[in-house]
Image (cartoon, rainbow, N blue to C red; front, side, top):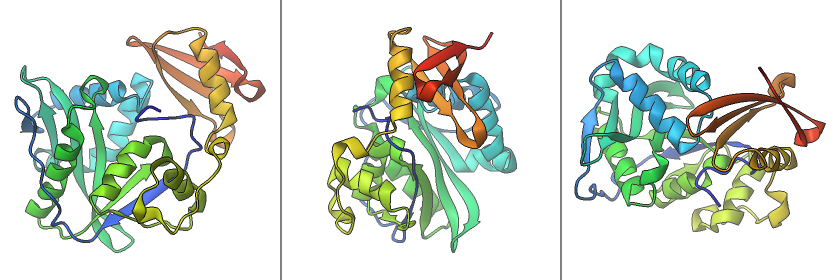
Length: 252
């Protein structure tokens, strides 16, 4: 199963960390930390999140960036950083955001590692540096929003000591319990494997697989929408889906 698995039923998961004295991990040799320094970093941020598969539309990525970052933009030189490879290419990012939510005044936002650099030991170092940055900025506890689709990242957060916060989102945490069997989720029961997935998204993915060999996709079906956005080798496509995802029509 992929690190971002969009065929899983979608549930938002909120997690908290009340002790920032976690294990520290250093970057592998050849990688460095670089903080946000100019407007060009917007394109770097977008490129990373397109490559993770988080977004499948350039417009979607741009809209999300401005939605989350415009209010914080003047502080990004202190609050947002990247990991660069040996050539200086930005390949991962994370942000510490000031908030006022559920008694927390700090959140971890938009951790992402380009797909070609996943599995190289960067995840623990990225999260470790993000927690350390929160401490440097004067915070003593953290909140983060994540989702069932990024289930492997959720496992990493659990390993670092993050706890489920929105425990009433029972099925979302049951999905994570089933996939990870993490001891921190022992209060949640496992599901049958076929209960984890969204048949509509499975149908859409199967139809896209008939058209493209390699692709990222995102599906929007809240409030009556039926949009599918596809990134296939950095070319972007927009479809409408019908018949519970079994039929796709290209929007021209």
